[in-house]
Length: 113
Picture 1 (cartoon, rainbow, N blue to C red):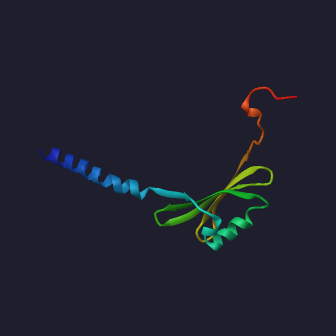
Picture 2: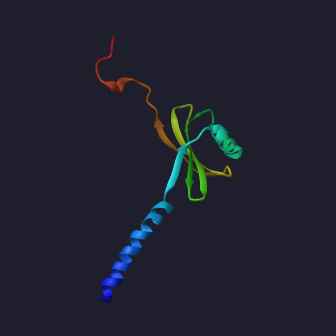
Picture 3: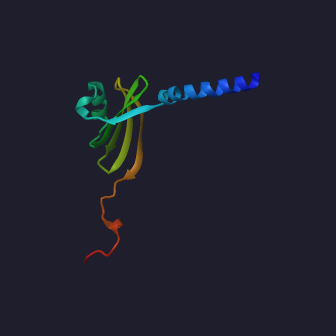
């Protein structure tokens, strides 16, 4: 009888704790305009463009930690990703090595001569 009580107590505790665990691991990611990010983050982004352009800018909040995810399309079509902390420091940054394909050759059919 005591074992059933202990087991059920564990199950009930787990069910009650689950929403808090899910919420603790939740990240909030939302698009943001360049003008709405801190000046130090804008400066870091600008100094890492190297002639490219920002194609995507998101604000990510993970608990109390705020960072900014930036996709930059370089002059050669390469996409680079930066993760910048709210203080302007670069947390991670890497190039994907992918070029965007602007050709229409993937639509199928014949090309007019």
